[in-house]
Structure formats: C-alpha cells, structure tokens
Amino acid sequence: MFFPNIRSRRLRVSKSTRDMVAETSLSTNDFVYPIFIKEGIEKKISIKSMPGIFQLPLKDAVKEAKEAYSLGIKSVILFGIPQKKDEIGSQAYAEDGIIAKSIYEIKSAIPDMIVTADACLCEYTSHGHCGILDKNGSVLNDPTLELLEKEAYVYAKMGADIIAPSGMMDGMVKAIRKSLDNNGYYEKAIMSYAVKYSSAFYGPFRDAAESAPAFGDRKTYQMDFRNAKEALKECMLDIEEGADYLMVKPALSYLDVIRLVKDNFPYMPLAAYNVSGEYSMIKAAAKLGWIDEKAAVIESLTSIKRAGADIIITYFAKDMAKTVEV
Ligand code: PBG
Image 1: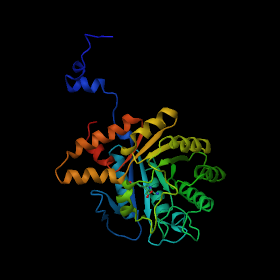
Image 2: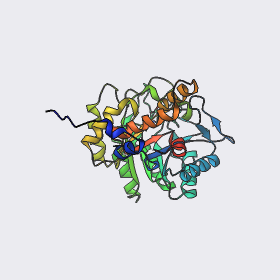
Image 3: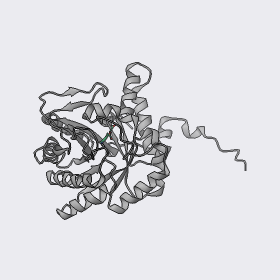
Image 4: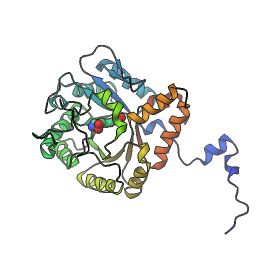
C-alpha cells in the first residue's frame, strides 16, 4: 500500500497543532506527593541524596501538605520515621506513633486531601526488613500479616483514605481488607504495591526513611527485575484479594511492565511510583548542568503516563504543579 498524501509533519507545524493532537497529557490530578515525617525533630533536615526533599517535623509536614493541596495536588503518601525502632516495628501501629499522628493531623487540616498511608514495617524495625524475622534472619510471612492488619486498622482509624501495603508479603491485601472490613472501614481503599521490584533505585529513599536493611537485601520478597509476566500473577492475586488500585514500582525502568499490566487489567486504576533514584538522577545531572531539569522531568513523567499509568507517585509533584503548563 502506498499513501502519497500522508505527511507527518503537517501535524507538527505549530505548538497549538501539536497540543491539539497530543495523545497524552499530565495533570496535577495524576500526582501523589510523598512526605517524610520524622519524630522528635524541631527543624526540617535535608536529605543529601534527594535535593529539595526533607525529613519534616509534623508541624512542617502539615504545612507541606497544605502547600501541595493549594497547588492542585489531591493526594499525599506519608512515610514516618520513629525515634525508637524495635524487632517488631511497634511504632508502625502505635496509636500515638509518629505516622498515626501525621495521618490524623494532615487529614484534619485538609479533609479533602486523599491521605494515602504506606503500610510497611521497614521504617520501624531495628533490622530494616519489611516484616518479622525468624532466627535465621528470613522474613516470616504470616506473622507479618498480623502486624499489617493492626497497622491498616490504626491508619484507617486515624483517617487515612487509602492503605498502600508495600512489603510484598503474600496475602497482604486479603489480610488488610479483612481487618478494614471487620472494623467497619468498608470505604477505605487499598492501593497495593502489587508489582514492586527489588531495585537499586530505592537507595536515596532509604536515606530519607532511614530504612535500609541492616543485613542482606529484599530479594526474597520483592520481585526479580528479570520478570515481567510474573507481574500479571501478582496483580491477579491482589485483585482477587480485594485491591482497589494496582501499582508498578519503580516506573522508568519498568515502562514495559506498566503497559503489560494496563493492557491486561484495564479496569484497575494503575499507579506508578517514580522512585527516589529516578528523582535523584535527574537532580544530579541537572546540578552538573548536563540536562535540562524541567524538560527531562516532563518527558519522564509523560512517558510513565503514556505507558499506561493513571496515577504517578512522584517527588517532582510540587515542582510540576508550580512550573508546568503541561
Ligand atoms: C517501603 C518502601 C520503599 C519505597 C517505598 N516504600 C523502600 C523499599 O522497599 O526499600 C521506595 C520509594 C522510593 O525509592 O522512592 N517498603
């Protein structure tokens, strides 16, 4: 077949034309902004590996959330850093713990903000793993689920709208759904980190959340990055267990997986986590003058959306909302 009259460049002649035919667009409605709240500090502490991101005292975290909201960002995801850690991560589900208080304060200050609570144990355990350990140091699955049930209940009680389990334990969605329903929290949603890879790109986050494992790695629970089809199994199980949203994490090295998940489960809202390492790489290159930061951020986030994500969790959310006419 030969179409002599088809010319591509007619659709690129002007910015207005390009805008009119663009297949993908970004909006502040798509963004979830992560906030780190540290117990026992008075002033914010900058995170060296994540320029522009801070560990915040609770009062500043509320301000940060308000600022994000005023910029049009509808959701935050919260990470707590407790003063005391122990083997069973008690501060993760303590009703007077830093994360419980943060959820309560932020939700009370901005009732319309969708407060998403990351539900994991690694920021709260002395060993930095995402669950309880046996004597050989491996993570015990089912005993960990019991803690996640408590954690989800406390976060829901404090006002969280979405519980986002990120520990990659088998059966975590089912356990959390049961705990929420048994306590009457039928309307609280679950955003499962269904497809979470064991990734080198979480490095800076572990500085921010003080959650690096004290020994070993997370390869016995997080996914192997050589696998894509396995992501479909993870999603299928989580949907069956009651997940309302799915997530793929990280985002940029996994655009193929985002596309695969979206094509197979088009009816599930899909989030992608543009993780700390993806943020820091752009920040570092921009600081060296090697890349145009704003252009690189817009291109990266657009690629995540184009791949099929509906929601993007990103440290760039505020910057984008401020600067972008997207
Ligand atoms: C907790 C958790 C992690 C991230 C989000 N929730 C770290 C990890 O699994 O080690 C990483 C986010 C990022 O890198 O921005 N389990």
